[in-house]
Figure 1 (cartoon, rainbow, N blue to C red):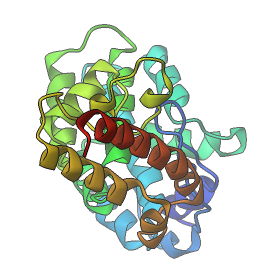
Figure 2 (cartoon, rainbow, N blue to C red):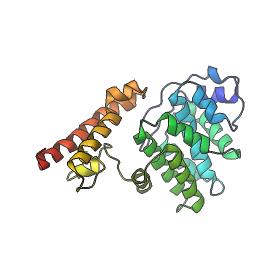
Figure 3 (cartoon, helix red, strand yellow):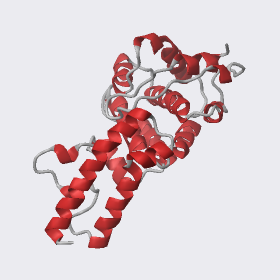
Length: 253
């Protein structure tokens, strides 16, 4: 089995933790048996293997490794932050560590991985925002952000096609709309919908509809989202609807 075949097969059961929390499904390695080592076409190769879960798992490892490397030698704090953000079962650690080390050693660019991940999850922007937030935590693990790290993260934002407010939430560690904030006492219903309080009725209605389209379990299932992510969507939908109901009552809509 070639390098990519071992990696993709080896990280079956790879899971994301920290702010992401979506379990990546089983990954078949046989399709990559003839692949070579990490190279300029690796992101395209991962995308062509037929599973967004495969692409996701490979991309977050590569992006994390290259981010840790961009400000100098990788240190233990950065590796520990990576493990904390993207938890990996012990039986898969060797394979993921091999990919992490390969990614930080090579001079290949990280941009294709950000771009392909952004394309694959274009309809699930909350996932991409959470990944960017995890990368911010890895970058800060060894001290304040450097200019190189900021440039790296800005390029990831571009590849993910995230807007300024999504960048700001990821940077500042803020809860995104539908991510549990409405369970806190005194939460601002407008913040759940990602709106200012002076938003028009039409803007509120449009934001509610957009979030419902993005987070509804049936819609996510039709887009091929992992089962655990679909289950989490049920709670998000309830939070979004609670915020919408509160605003409707206040405005007598």
